[in-house]
Image 1 (tube, one colour):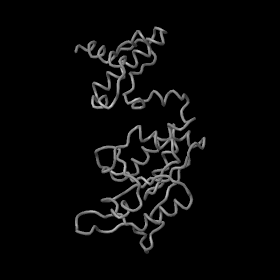
Image 2 (image 1 turned 60 degrees about the vertical axis):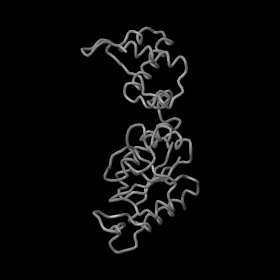
Image 3 (image 1 turned 180 degrees about the horizontal axis):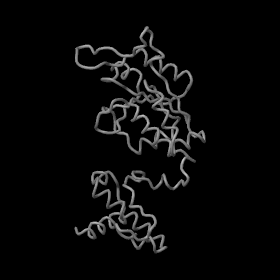
Image 4 (image 1 turned 90 degrees about the horizontal axis):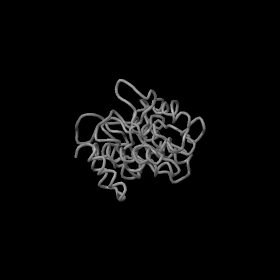
Length: 246
């Protein structure tokens, strides 16, 4: 898989491929990360890529031409149908389903905006979609791009030491993850639940599913509204609520 990022701070973005799971995935060549600086495509003596907004107002706006030329350079190398995605707080919400969709494709061309944003003519003519990582504003699209890369990379076959890790992640089944415990068995903050020490794998899986359903219900109940829970799942959720005291 190939991932390209158009950014004014390429050295910042490439660090995502230096550490942890994404670093190991890059070392295994499960994906390639390429960065493109629009300043390299600027055609003025100051290498500027922004200008004042028409209509007035604070801040600067990224110009169309340097971004378009950067995109043309990317496409000349890729020669595929990878989507062009702008990271923007105005975009569609990026979630695990989007991560899976992109991980199953040829990759992506991510565009990181800066300043007050990108000239809308670029968005209208060159971009396939905008994605948002949350309802907040950052200084630029680099951190969101790195987040998207991380979410994609860990889903690539061979990226994780245990393939089941990706299957059991939060949101993979539309639910939060169940509680996790490790040694020691007893600690000042409490003991490990007995069921996890029982060796009864069926009981453990039932407990984990119940906890995942319950945590989702407690913290993000709206997520359950979009799920078609089975009869068993509905019963487990009822048990969790009852055990919680209603």
